[in-house]
Amino acid sequence: MLDLHLKHVLAQAAGAPDLSDLPPEACRGLYHMICTAATAPPADVSVTPHETSFAGQAVNVRIYKPHGATAALPVTLYFHGGGFVLGDLEGYDAVCRQLCADSGVMIVSAAYRLAPEHPYPAAIDDCHAALGWVAESIRSFGGDPTRLAVAGDSAGATLATTTALLARDAGGPVIAFQLLVYPAAAGGHDGDYPSRQRHAAGPTLTLRTMDYFNRHYYGPAGKAPDWRGAPLLAPSLAGLPPTLLVLAAHDALRDEGMAYGEALAAAGDAVTVVEYHGLAHGFISMAGAVPAARLALAQMASALQQVLQP
Image (tube, rainbow, N blue to C red; front, side, top):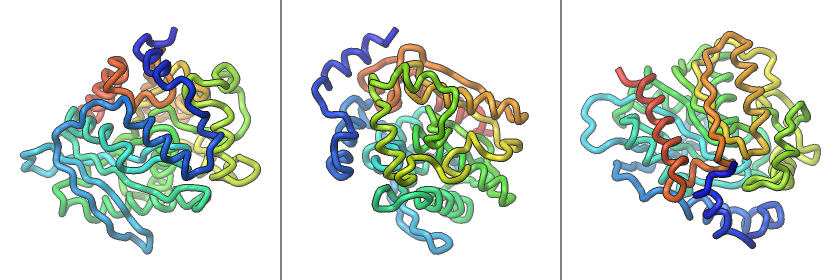
């Protein structure tokens, strides 16, 4: 059963075009409206924009800290959603503010280049550079890189866990936790994922839009050319940090997300899967209108606090 508050949000958006019906630039404008239409009022935390570079890659972040923090704070590096084509730091400002306020953890929201202007693997390169910069430089902003998590939603969740895999393979930086919200874990590849057809028409993310994103990012085949774009297909998932995997029942990506959780557990990783039965893809940006989405954000923040705070 779809959450009644979510039904109301969707009714207000009735008549809006499917994202796949628009060219990327117009699509980005509509997506920004969607991301900000139902967010919670912005939590009162300190926000510091910062642009720099790391290993030759541009790094563009917003650093969120609770007011009055004196000791070094644990850090969560957050990657926004948007199918690798949409999304930006401003559209996810309310989400990051709320996670920071609820958890007491520093949130570093990192931008990355978008397709089709910057196709695969540009986003991965940018996110990996952001992780390197955080590990090397976040102390000067009051963060403690020895207590570090990665997080993200949708495409951002895929980027977060790929970044964790790359860090594992490189021997660091050490990541203590990953928070993954409805990841696109299969990178467009086929599999036993009935939710793709069950929710092909939404209610939020449609199969047409998924294909639109995948073709812009991965190329005409619409499939990740290697495991970095499809972490579910990684040769080994062993040695990844403990994971909170957050899913929505009314989501075309639900089954591949669940498959990723099962694969993490089979590899010996600690994983907790929480599924919100009344919610749909994108709910992380709906905390201002959907109480269950607000509860979900609070539960995610609580997990970050429990794992990262001393």
